[in-house]
Image 1 (tube, rainbow, N blue to C red):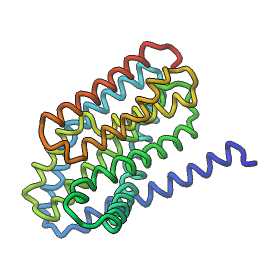
Image 2: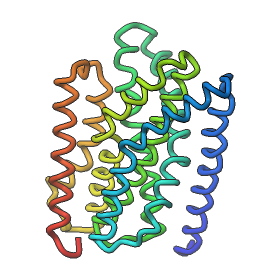
Image 3: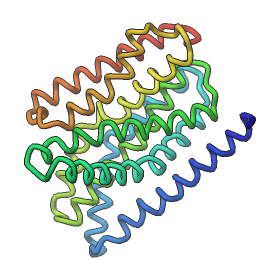
Length: 267
């Protein structure tokens, strides 16, 4: 029988392995661009616009870390892991799944329109959750507050990675569209991956920590992230009214869970 220390070593090695692949993967994606020095500078400026949401979110997380007396060193650690260990893996998995679906169902308009909804929600949420579970195993948290913080940080790291990759991909096609793409990513950032993973982590944590929250709330946290992600990526979300509705539901659910945990001591 392997001891907990042995499992910790295995998990640390896996995370490091994924992390170093991610570092090479993400930086090579940028260094491989055929851009002039001026265009690279414009690209860095466009990526810098993401700080408009990153800084407020980090401030919010620092506030919650301090309010709930959680060790602050885990914030940059989980952000870093979320960025480099999950982003590239989800990208590769999404691409593989897309090829499989097209091969099975055909390359028609209906399949193409629903492709992002059929792949990303399940693949990305599961990959992020596996990362959260590994970190949770290492830290062995006792409260759902910690699960929420770890999930939010891993999700935010993934979200930043995805946003940068979208901007970089646009740069390969038309350098003049990188700023509009950056603002497009910022507009959807408030209720994106950081929120989905935070809710998902609370749902998983409540399965382990019995009676922390109700069964109804647990199921909500487990089902809502993939469902909302699916609807966001689907052809149903083609107007600002639908996207605003989905964002409102996501924000309300997170506020409800956050308030619920904040009011309970030892949860």
